Image (tube, rainbow, N blue to C red; front, side, top):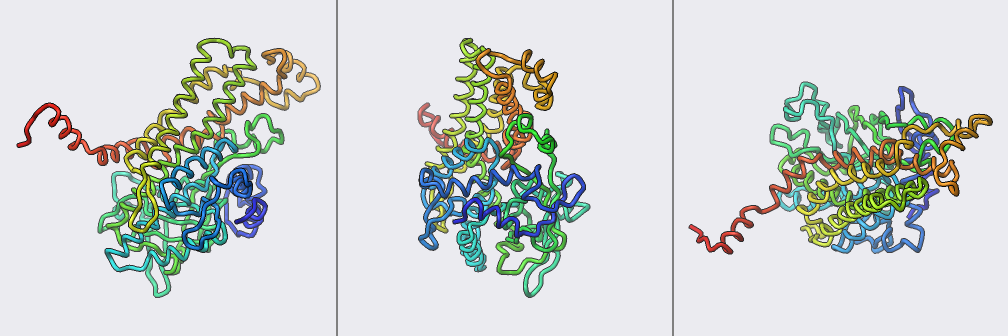
Length: 482
């Protein structure tokens, strides 16, 4: 397993082509806007080296029997699924941000079982190819970006009917030695901090969309791949030199547009190519795993936000107010409900044909449906308790100013025993999670990541077995079946 420092050094060896604010980035690792997100991924390596967290952060490879980072692991039991959620909560608590390796972990588990069943039915050899890739991933302790979301263009049209065919990643050429792909993947969490990318189709494809039913792996710096870094609220505060106003100076997340400009992929790295009838299975399984993930990572960040809100109440002198106590209880209740769903869908997991374990898909979708709502209410209550000063207080430079700093100190102090600086620090942390850079992961990603709310409702309707529930009611009511 890599150490945190080895991980950082491995990124420096990549020749990534990244554009940020209209300029080509010379060193993504050292860029002040990007680096906090890299620090979050480093934490997944750091904790894996700590004996205190070994049970959660590491696992035993079913391929080699060696100890590996859990993010490179195929779940071998329901207990593995539970430990995954607990690990994600821990990392959310340690970073208060998106730590980015979840998409890759969820992708490898979805691709594993799908390729196995594809081979069984169609006689293909995708699973052996994928297992070879997985073995290398485990040996090198790679961070892998799971790339599913396409730009999609006109949502009313299928991929093959789009005016621009590149709005969905697709095969443009098949050669004796591999395929050539073109298109893009949007909202790619942690892509610039990844060693490899694992591409999957974004929706269930029909026969006419067979060229878009493609899954493959590629080095993150492969020829023809480049990235356009996404803006985040308050992101340029990282360029100001201070540490209070950013709210969370050390950790963060990122998203990027990943563009494939006629990229060659050797056959050994191709895991689906035209088998459109299995595209829906891959999408559904990846989405299920990723919806489970949110029952861990969002909860860990929620723990930090709840703690920050309680401190803000202390510093404001309002901690004893009954309504404040009640709101903090409500925040904890909502947060633990999210966690309960993440644990439940894991505990109810079952073995797939390939041998790895998948969550209970119905409960995973219930988990994510709650995630589309509860973090917003937790954030609202945090803003309620924190007060308006969270978004109106002066800058750190004003606090440090030799003249007006004394004024800031005087008029923005709450409880006399707490320094104005500490009050400002905790309010900026709340701002960071609810409105700033971390709000990408805690709020909007909670809404749209792993599928928007309607996607979960469709799956709940499909998997909720309403007819069985009708039959139960008929049996109790004495209604005879005809």
